Length: 494
Image (tube, rainbow, N blue to C red; front, side, top):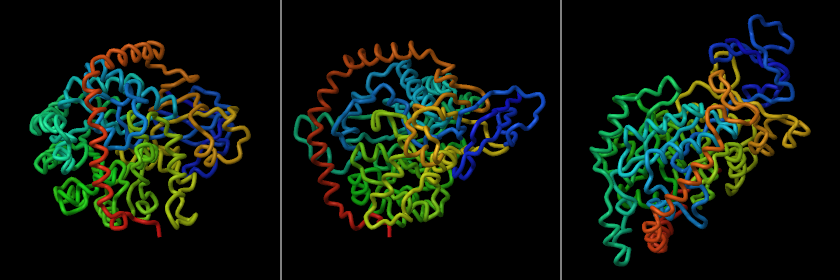
């Protein structure tokens, strides 16, 4: 079917203007961008008067399992979040996994997102059934996705140098006894999912995400890379997100975390870093040389006191840069408009950085669309002939757009998702008049409330233990961070 969007303002590929234009869509792709009033035969017309058409935002890094965990913590840094993971995501049934991913996908769709790089967690290991359920959730909502299970063969307590030894009893004994699945079993589970994968036709691709380099033995990390190479899977890893992790890398590897991963063969065009707050200049140059990328997740980095990623320096080095929200257990929402705004804000906080170093609004929009698309391996992120018809329609009568002064500025500075009216993915409507077409939102809300209540009871004991051990975790990890000289590793914008 051919569809013609008429009467709309259409964001140009450079995101610098939004002239009145018409968009012809055919076979799920943009066939042409036409002047207003162009005669087009055999096309269904959609009146988009008073609408701004933008490319769908692409979330470069999230966690679908966080949908049921939003608002779980307050004064947490990353180490405390990981210390509380046992109850935040514990006790999940197969239905819970699908429900949580559905919540995440629905929120992204309603806030103008059409694709996401999702790193879901299952404990003790990924399962074919769980990954299928999560993929089905994305398919029902209508988003494209890379679904890369987040895995490691070491627990947080094993992975953090000196942490178990620093804990008083009885915490030490319990932490030392914690175990996940064996590395071979984890890799085997992903391999089984890859062999049985049936979701590519819905735009959902399987990936592999060794969660944090410290959380994997060298043998495990190499096995993940071999598996990904065998099946052509993309890879993403949390690298240098927090300062204590950067310190841990030097203690364990006598190298940066990225340098160590590269020595094992993990870094290449298939690979992207999530966060990268404490990457060095040489790390950035290495990523550029290898054709790898970074998802810049400013909201989560501020929320968890991790710091500010060197976005401008990454761009200058030639690294592909996208923008993400992170999961709702670490950033608490899936609002890519907010992520853009915070990315632009954060670029202004670098010491001694002049305005030439800041992220401009049009540039920020391109990072959240075309940049993140590249991280997912998608040929999209802009409105141009031949590109996928992944489009978002914003209401120009909404207060965020009254008056329309500058499309790029208002996308970043004033839009918060509330003006999103319609969304299409691959030329098919997925959101119409602010309603999700593939999911019963009222039932979704009821199911989420019931699941949250049940999980609170099921995880009560582990939650109490996590809360008791948390101060000791915080003390040790903050000591690690303080012992690591910021001036040695922090890349300043000069």
